[in-house]
Image (tube, rainbow, N blue to C red; front, side, top):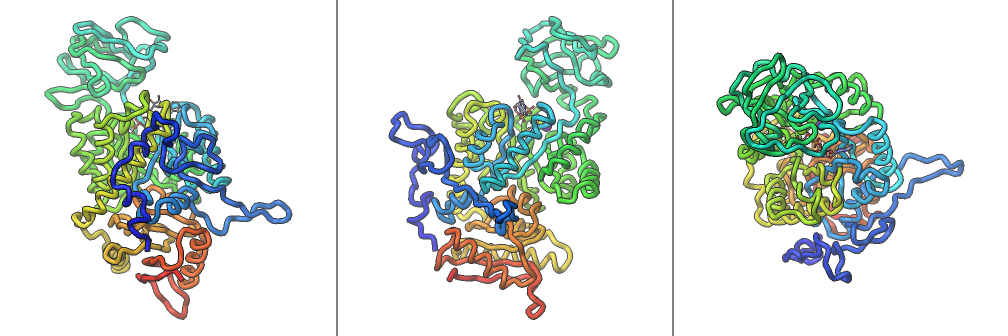
Length: 570
Ligand SMILES: Nc1ncnc2c1ncn2[C@@H]1O[C@H](COP(=O)(O)OP(=O)(O)O)[C@@H](O)[C@H]1O
Ligand SMILES: C=C(OP(=O)(O)O)C(=O)O
Ligand SMILES: [K+]
Ligand SMILES: [Mg+2]
């Protein structure tokens, strides 16, 4: 079994500055683990990952790999032991600052599990190149990075401001908010993107820019335009969001805007044709849009594409449980949520959303402004580190970088802050045995599903009590793996699946390391085969103790449907 002393996280109780921050002393590394292999800058890499060997036959034809694993998890396991494996998953938004093959590779080595493409920005051709780069890295270098597209959605916002990066609105200044189209910039005039933006708005209403960057009062309606006086000075940024408030409540026409615009559907078709793994739906209002998109995907794509609902509007909060039930996962999109609800309500909303997701067994991503200052600066604020820690303490499945990776100067470093901070908080939660404090409501209704759920709950209790090194689960659609993950066990969950979409989907789930492998009907055969492969790769060794959970039909001679076994690696 992995001893405490062999676990770098456990044996180094004191947070060492050089784990995140580059030392001024060049002899002290950026990270505790030196880099070898294909990373060019040793100060920037996290783990040694070896290039996967793709079998090629005598005619040069590439054979399907018999066993797909994640080179980064493999390296992390060898370096840090079972308990040192990171459980919280990391999502990076890919933008111009990190889109080259080399930059993506560095993010992959830094622990990126999912690459997110925000379809609000850039062209489809640009996104296609990124998708192909990520797939190439997966194939050639043995990474397991899933791909997510995030729809633009419909929202009221200002259009560009004639190329300016911002405009100052002074206290008491008068402005026209208009739907007229014009090129360039006109003083004290702002173009809104949506013709009906002023419908239902009355004199005296408050117009808030970007959730509080500046505030105006509506003083006159001029046709479909609004004349407004600045009451709280501030900055207007390109595409700044517009919301109207009356008596402390949101008013206006956002709800008339479709969840999926024509452009969104075209982006979704693009995602299907490029074979993405997740589609994140912006400004979801209710479960209907999710169901509609899932139906559409089931007829258009042979592989399962998972649909994530972004909770970023008042309406989505009102229909939260239905939305969580209908979707394959959730993103707490705090950027726009902070435009639609008062900022001080976001922490409670986040905690509630993460809790409901765990109860309903859906993965949840906490997103936006986690390390916002790192877009410009090489160190995070203490408050940002505390925010990241809080999301990990709440057992969110994943954390997301937005501008920090898309346009920031310190993408890899921001990723390493997420990695080190989450590792630290996971260790603390284990030491405090915090997962046992969380009671779970029963999910399943049918007897087979209830059995699966109970097996997973018991398996995790056993795994924690026995202190096993790892949990192995054999799963076709990922249900058993996700039910194990839901219990947030101490040991890592190695999930073996024969479906590529299951492997990429499980990538977003807390504590799950997915492997691709051919599974047979014979469970003993599967167990023997995976033990051998994992041992050959040096990921387990003789004497390691593994708790094995399976839900795949065994051979006709021994029809085992679900089982828990504790095995020692021979
Ligand atoms: N594909 C891209 N091309 C260009 N810029 C991008 C891209 N993706 C993201 N960005 C930039 O990164 C910033 C942060 O990304 P994100 O949070 O996803 O978007 P937004 O700020 O629009 O909500 C964006 O404001 C945008 O400036
Ligand atoms: C993640 C978010 O969505 P987007 O970046 O697409 O606005 C958000 O609003 O927090
Ligand atoms: K978006
Ligand atoms: Mg948003």
